[in-house]
Image 1 (tube, one colour):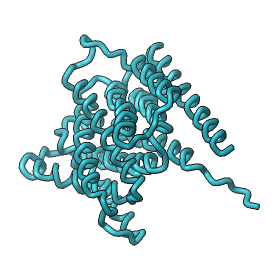
Image 2 (cartoon, one colour):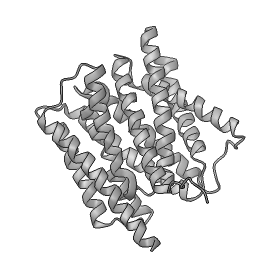
Image 3 (tube, one colour):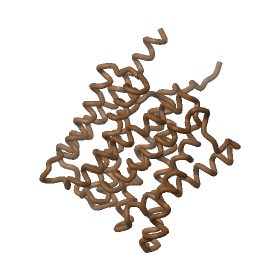
Image 4 (cartoon, one colour):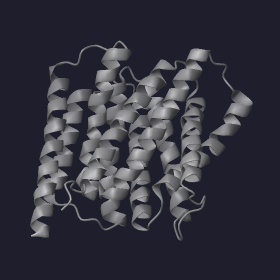
Length: 298
């Protein structure tokens, strides 16, 4: 009789997506701290560090640097959509007044992961699951309180577009996971693709940086690598309808870090209500899915 109980894939997915939310919130903070470095340069360093870790992990495990059969087109689609998503998110994070606002716009990605998974992967969405996602989104709207008068339209559109692209990228990750693709290679491919695409900008338009800015950008890459590995693992372990709601914890993490490290104001009552709604939706979703699994297992 074993004393330890194995974690289900769904629970592993939830843990991974919470860790990724924490990593990506740290990435947003370091993006802001790095200052006036051009967005393509920030994106290059973000992916350069991830490429190093992904390569080292594959080598250490003795795994091959090649995609699983039939996944190469999806790697290209995932990498292209993911890179566009990173550009949109970085631009919004740099040009919006509060990182939590940019994080909220990026959190459109669970919606589009849900939609794209339903359309292309035929993953059914139950009414209560959709309701929990909508509830979490409503909480996020309380956090940002978007109005055309308060939010610059271009950074907002960039952030929204980044969320759409991220949703498409995570759907590809899910599909490749179903085909047996190695998540570590998925991170490697995306990182290598992104470095190759952004490297020409640095060659011809390099922006001089202070040593402090370089350190911050290396931390951007470190957080991004952690977030990339854990988000890839999350959507490999479980379908988006079961875990995507937990990605909203990123807004809470980002707001806390914004207050502690970036000198942002204390969240107002509406924001605090939004955080509460997000957490309640996540907890409700967890118990709903847990009950559904128990009924299926009889």
